[in-house]
Image (cartoon, rainbow, N blue to C red):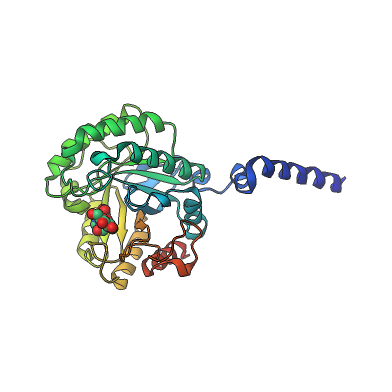
Length: 333
Ligand code: IDC
């Protein structure tokens, strides 16, 4: 009897793997993806919480600019990060003004890479940030109408997809907090028209460091809104951690949607002591964070070595010092 039961069980399992493939089979039965455990996220007080109201800290990796490194938007890459790096979040950095970006001729290509990225991350039960990556176009108002149109369509498309998080302006610079507010006051309702629940991340002036200005004058929108802080450990130190702490004390929910451990140019030496201080701070305060960036460009912040052409399945020897540091920090108990 027991033998017969085992035989039937084996047949069922084999049938599933034949239909879905070994990987698909795992996903069909997946009891343990980040999303199956935590479900739709929301903001409670200053914390990000899961479907059970329990505080959750996301550990993410950002793509480099989608136009420069599209090859890393693939399911096997995301799966490697999920299974070997303990990553539960992918950030899709969709530059606007730079090379091949959304507002510089790359609209269709950008949208299709975002669509694929969201599809791969969702199918692996990972969270995914759609990042409107303003940078040289420092004032978000510059491309406000394009952003409103883009996010309206994204929200319509993904309103039932609880994996998706919207980041509406990567790093405002050369403008005032009132400009960012004016922009957010247009883009947030455009998203909320369709998607009532998704978490929305809002940047601040000086490359998303001015949490003090945010704390003095937050947006009127409160539901599932978080404010981003970006740090590069060799440039942004205790003073920025203090600013984050002060903002949290004033009730501001903070999300570190981009960081690295070198200087703000993305290059220069790693500051290990400051990086350690940040990781300790992040863990202690349960702040979600996203490391920049998944690519093999010859610069310090790249996670993959310049001579490694693999786009998934990296061994430790394929990783830069930054890559090794991030992987270790994310997998540390
Ligand atoms: C950098 C990339 C670099 C690219 C440059 C484009 O690492 O390869 O040539 O952008 O201008 C940020 C930005 C992020 C930057 C990164 C490092 O959000 O786009 O990426 N950085 O300079 N803020 C602080 C640092």
